Structures are given as structure tokens and as C-alpha cells.
Length: 159
Image (cartoon, one colour):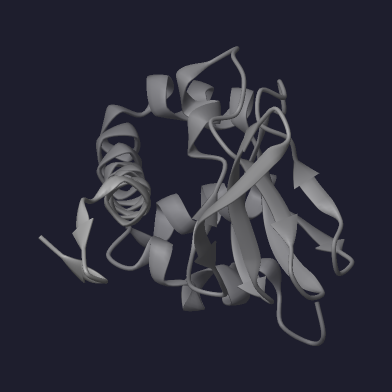
């Protein structure tokens, strides 16, 4: 991570804006830098992946998969988070994530994050509020995709 510490890099990520310094320090202690090559799957829809990511650089496609079809729901980048569903505990990922270009991210073990939220309710509340923004953004992106696919059209114009 060049000459910056993980804590310094983490402080610059918009996801942690407003978190207490002690919370940022706790996150930095459990962060691991990871990299993904272009077109590499970060996780598949339905995977039991237990990692939460903060993207540092690169772009990632969030995709919904169905037999014979993959639909891009949203493209996220260096100010975004991936893998919010780890906070729900065991269960599959909602979307598939694929690197559109080389990606650098910080990865966090979901079980450790959940444990920290339970042990420190102040941290848990602030972290959960930040995750709700991510979930809301994903829901809005999925809604827009559905509107684009299923909106009635007449003469090439939306009704």
C-alpha cells in the first residue's frame, strides 16, 4: 500500500467519513489489501463469501444473474463499498461482482465486523447507518434497471 498505512488509506475512503478515530483504527486492524484483475469475479451471486470490501481504485460491475443472462445493475468504483450482505450473517450474495479493470480494495472479514458491532453498539450503529446508504443505493439502481426493462413504451417514448 505504497508508503501510506492502511489506517491512512482508510481515513481517505468516503465510507468512513464521520466515524470516530477509534472506530477507524479498529477497522484498520482487520483490513487486508486485495487486488483483482480485469474480468476477475470478486464474488458470485449466491456465494457464501464472508468479505466486505471498500474499493480503493478501479471499477466493479454489480450484476444479477439468471439462466442464460447477466444484467448489470450498477457500476461502482473507488468511493464505494461491496459485500454489504456479509453483515446479515451466513447466506448468499445478492449480486455478482466482476472487476471491469484492475481493482484494489480493502477486505474485511464479515464475522469479525459483526462481532465488533455486537461488542461496541456505538460502532455498530454508525457502521449499520453507513451500510444502509449502500443498500439504499443498490435498491435504487435495481429499481432503475427494472424501470428501464419493463417501462411501457409507445413510439420509442416512455409513457
